Image (cartoon, rainbow, N blue to C red; front, side, top):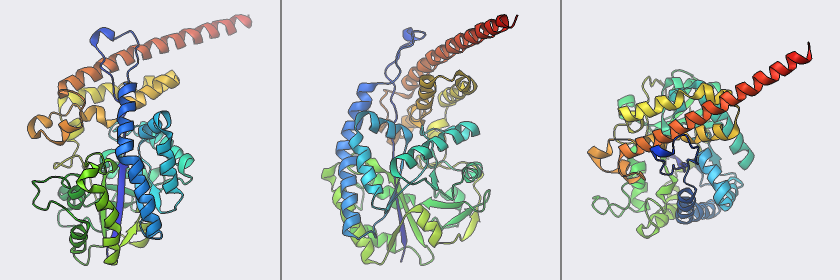
Length: 413
């Protein structure tokens, strides 16, 4: 028997509109409301709503034995609220079954853990509050943006009260160890690590509809056979993927929904047990302590940070963004703080990746820009305008405070 942990990431960024150099200093809106609305409507109709309905049916059909988990970014939750509240309602219906666990992450789907402990903590707490308010239970399991993890991030998550963290089962970290066991964090021994089986996960997420793949077409029965062929000492198989796998990355016509519908029965027939992350660490003790000094992620074959911070464009934009942190904290202006939060989404840096110029695959597929250089220029135009607005607001705030101080001093004369 294997324990099967099925986890889905749900995320939508606030995409930037085309922002020219000539607009800098004029304070125009940064985010493309029409594009964000249209994309959410499309993805919701193709994926979120039908997939949620299917999961609800499967949970009922299997009398609660089928269990899944989600991490929904704060930016996605905000878009649901603005554009399509029925999506939130459909996730709330899943929460009400008691068979679905919702994880915490950074609110802005950001890379803050790599730059600012304070901003990371602020976003994680805000996201946990949001999840608690929407679904009625505070998260105890954590998933950092893009599954990025190292010992330092584990220590920060543990300090925030999380007992479990999800990350990539990268071979450069595991070496001879199996990703199919629970591990304890070397930095925080009470923190449990669940590691993605990237081969089986990617068979669904990336290869399912590839007609050139030797295993196409993939059936749930064959997938269950692969999973059960794992050695007896492999206690858990963690299948982590984007939720948009179902109906968006693989259209309904590929058979992806039929595969998902058949999967619980095929795995159940072999005596396997579905678990959420929190259930997994309660049932399975850690087999060893695992240290990850260097960050790993689930971006691509490299399993590192190069998809987001691998070139000078990305590094420049990233450093310029977080150079504004102290000013943003000091401004006490809700709109500016929200815009800065949305500008932190990892997608903006992903669009600047030049790895697509070499592999031409996943990186270019998700980008709304013609090339990474256009993505960089547009982002930096927005960031420059944002910085100017921030400085103007802080100067006005200082002027008002100075005038108030002068007035108060005069009243005491």
